Figure 1 (tube, helix red, strand yellow):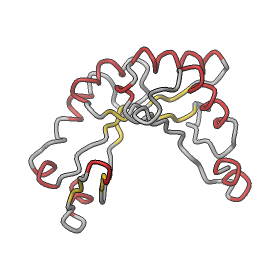
Figure 2 (cartoon, rainbow, N blue to C red):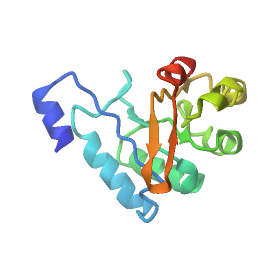
Figure 3 (tube, one colour):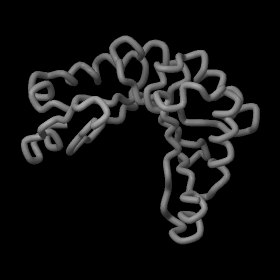
Figure 4 (cartoon, helix red, strand yellow):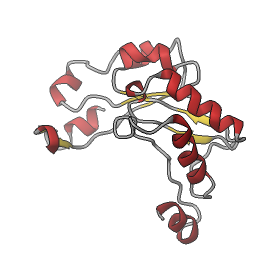
Length: 163
C-alpha cells in the first residue's frame, strides 16, 4: 500500500526496499525474491540511474552469503538487476563474504557516543577499501531497543554530529 500510495501521490518520492534478515529468517529465498520483485514493480521503488534496484538488506549475515546470492540470482533471472548494499552488523568479519555481489558496503554503526568518540567506527573505510570504494554511513540521532531494555544516550546531538 505504501509503494502504491507513494507512486500515485508523490511521483518523485522513492522508497528503498530493505529486507530485514533478522526479522525474516524463516522466509525462503524464492519467497524473498518474489516479495522484492513485486515491490520493485512500483515507480516509487528506488533505482540507480542505470535502472538497478537499490537493495540494502539489514543484517544479511543472519542468513548468510549463499542465501543472499541465491536471492540476487533469482532476481537477475527475472530480469531485475540489483545494486546490493549490505548493511552489516559485524562489518569486520562479514565484509569479505558480501563484497563480491556488493555495489557498495554499509554498516549499522555505533550507537554509543563513547564508542564513537573512541574510534569504534574509524576503521570502517580502510577495511572496506579492498572490497569497494562506495560506502554508506549510518546516522543515528537516537536509538532505543525496548525488547532488550537498551537505550543509548546521545548527549543531545553529539552522536549525530560525530557520525
